[in-house]
Amino acid sequence: MIDNLKNVLIGFRQEGTPASHALRYGLSLAREAKAHASVCALSPKVVITHAFVSGVAAGLVAAENNRLRELAENAVDEARKDAVSAGVLCTGEVLQEPYAALTASFTRRARVHDLSIVDAELNSWSLERGLLEETLFNSGRPVIVVPAGVNEFKARTILIAWDGSARAVRAVNDALPFLKAAENVEILSVTGEKDLSKSVQGSDLAPHLARHGVNCSVKDLAAAGGDAGETIRNQASLIRADMIVMGAFVHSRVRQIVLGGVTETMLGASPVPLFLTY
Image (cartoon, rainbow, N blue to C red):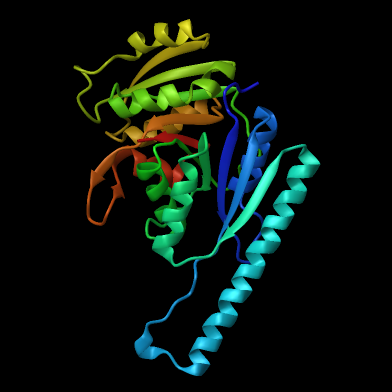
């Protein structure tokens, strides 16, 4: 059982498509941890500038917002039913606001939950990616990013992507409930992508985790072709990891916040859920 996990926040977007992977995964995790699930259906509010407003246009926009809200409300109702069937305590709400306000509202909710769960999104300019970045960098809480095709929570085998940084340390600390419940944990250090000679080594982390009751091993690998992300993905597949734990890395600021380096690589093609902190 996962200790010390009492409430999780699940954010998803519903526009007539099948229920999100994050929603299914999140309810499965809440059931396993005997935690409360807070479900937020995200419905970006369509707005038009006053310069182009007419009676007809305003009516069309209002109708579209009503349609999207109804879809989101139906999705929340279905999520509540699924939660009841699974024996999970669940509350749900629809967040319908303009894009910037929507991500800010979700982030405020994340601050009073143990962690947030969102869907992975390859498009770095999408709502889902904006939601992830805002929550990750401004909530102060960890985020689990669920890739397509993963609908059920499992964490028997966990891979820690370790570079000895403060962000990696925080990720490991925040993930302790999962690490302690796992059967196997591998600490992976990838060399060649950046200088780790002055960082805390994986062999130094292992005794600390062992004292917390974590069954762990240490692995050092050279980055395949200089690509640390590819090496992490390959190793995760090799050991059949159920989750990857890593600290998020900020690479540049082309916009307010842009994920870069290994983090961006992993978000684009992680085979399993990513447990991220910043």
